Every structure is written in C-alpha cells, then in structure tokens.
Length: 253
Length: 176
Image 1 (tube, rainbow over the protein chains, first blue to last red):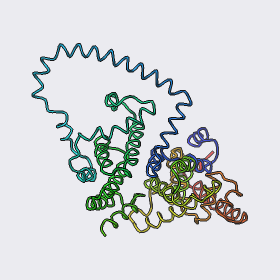
Image 2 (image 1 turned 90 degrees about the horizontal axis):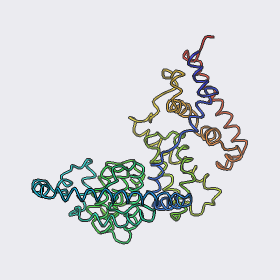
Image 3 (image 1 turned 120 degrees about the vertical axis):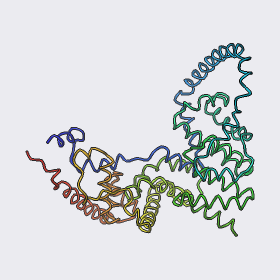
Image 4 (image 1 turned 90 degrees about the vertical axis):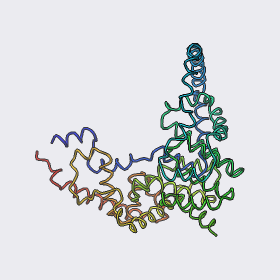
C-alpha cells in the first residue's frame, strides 16, 4: 500500500498515465540538435540567432559591464603581478634554463584516440605555429557575440562550462567549413589547430569529415581515402558514412 | 537544397518531434541522435518544394523510413537485435517504485509499442505522444479518417491489454 500511495502522490493518475507521460517527457539533448545543425552546415545561423536574442533581451548590456569589470580586475591583478615579477626576475632567470619549453610539453602529450592521431598525421608539419590562423575567424565571431579578446580567452578556458566549450567547437568547425570551399589548404591548417584545441571534443567525427573533404579538395587523394577508410571503420553507422563512402569510392577511381 | 536559414528553422521547429518519433518507432537511444541527423540530412536535400504546412508530414515520412532502415540494420546484427530496450514485458516485472524512474517507464512503453504492428503504433504515438488530432493524423499520414480511427482504437486496445497484463502481476496486487 505504501508504494502505491507514493506513486499516487508523485504521479496522480494510473499506470497508463505514467507510461504515456514518460514518452511525452522524452527529449533530445541540446548537443544532439547542435550536432545536426553543424552537420547541415547551419550552426553559424544558430549562433547568430542566439546572439540576436541575447541582444534583444538586454543581455549585451550586462555582459558589457561584466567585461569592463573583468578588465579592471585584470588591470589591478596585472599591476600586482608585475611588481612581484620585478622582484623575482633574477631568480626566475636562474631557473629558466632548467624548465622545458611549453611547446615541447604540449608536443609530448599523447593522443587519446587512434583516429585522431591519424587525422593529424594526414597533414604533416602542422605544429602550434598554425594556431593563429585558426583563431582569427574565431575571434571575429566572439567579438561579434560580445565576447572577450583572444588574449583573455586562454585564461578562462578551463572555467568554461561544457556547453560553452561545445559552442566554441561548433564555431570553430563552422569557420573551417566557411573556409573549405575557398581555400582547402588553409582549412586543413585550421583543422590541425582545431584538433589541438578540442582534442577531446564532442564533434570529432564532424571534424574528421571536414578533414576528409579538405584533403580531397586540396588534391591529397591518397590521404583522403586512407582517412575515409579509418572513419568508416570507426563510425560505420554515422549519418556521414554514406558521404564518406562516396568520397572514398571517387578517390579510388 | 534548402538554404542555411531555412534548414536552421526546420531543425529548430521539428527536431524534438523527429527525435521523439524515432525513439517511439523503435530506434535505440544509442543511435537516435544519428538517426535524427539522417532525417534532416535527407530532408534538407529533398524539401525544397515542400510547402511549409506539409513539412511535419514530410519529416515524419522520412523518419518512418529511417526507422525502418535502422530496424532492418539491427536485424542484420543479431547481437543488438533487441536494441537498448532489454526489458520485455514478459521479464520479471518492475515494481511500482521502479516505475517512478522515467527511464524504466520508457523502457516498458517501448516494449509495448514494439509489440504493436507498425501502422497502429504510428497512429498511437502521433495521437498519444504528439497529441495530434485525428484529422491532423489523417492529413499527415494521408489516410482516410475512418482508417486512422480504427487503427487508433485497435492500438489502444493493445496498449490496455499490455498494461492489464502488467497490473495483473503480483507486484501490482495490493491487499487492502
């Protein structure tokens, strides 16, 4: 009796209602929608709409004050840090020779997924030097959305929520897609930088698909075909599998 | 091919509907996101001439085909022929407490739907989940209203029968 009473309290109605309402409540994740928009090449439209909505609701004003406050705080912190650094310079200089470079440390990080490694290998000589190429379009979009400059972005990246990470990832791939039709070589460089930034990104299959397209468009048929085969082995049920099969078949002719 | 803005509007307006329809048409949770994406990929290429009022109907038609294809693919892979819905209504029944878990409830309803013929299940989910009127379902599926009504009546009978069997189990019998 106790259990049935509890159900009656929580869900007024019969078993039929519980079952039917469980179906009505079922809903996709926001990420699923974003992935679909990205796959259809209209994720940028989504960003534009949400930005407009935010502006209309007055969110822009709030974010402006937040940005002003943030930069004032950064100014104060930077001044204090500069004073401290001035006192510590001799000691830091003495330690510098024993510290490995940041780039060396980044390069030594192991890749977590085989296909991600292969994707990187398909575009040789794309080290950290290409990162600014990928950041240029991103900065433009963030600025348009009332975001902060790129110099401040790296400092706050770790505190971003997974949702904003996903939004960034979508924007990044959107920028690649925009570039792909005009300049596939540059798109490849942007993808290499994108892979560094989103090594564990939620949109890895979409990034690899873009890389296959870019390799194909830039005349690197063998690499496109090899990566296409790896994609099909890793994601045989992907909605993009048909397209990749088409590319692989075309390149093998 | 539709332009980006129209595709965006299409996805925003109908993604939940398509996703839910696919789930209830038997596409497992693990692959439903991909299946929904597939529906919109197909629709964006073929929908240029579809009038706004018929978009939902068109998308549902594509979803029906994608779900059917998914079912066929699953049958070809016997190891996951049961999808993610491992709970049969013949299995040891969940107790009333477990029904409070929505996921568990969905698992039960999915098994009930799985046992329904597809044409009845289609009408049932449009009426009971999407809460469309019978005239709308009739237009959406391009079926005579009488056919929709009879399929819905039969689907409800099957649903009530399955729920009755659940209720008949000892876990649901409570002595006063």
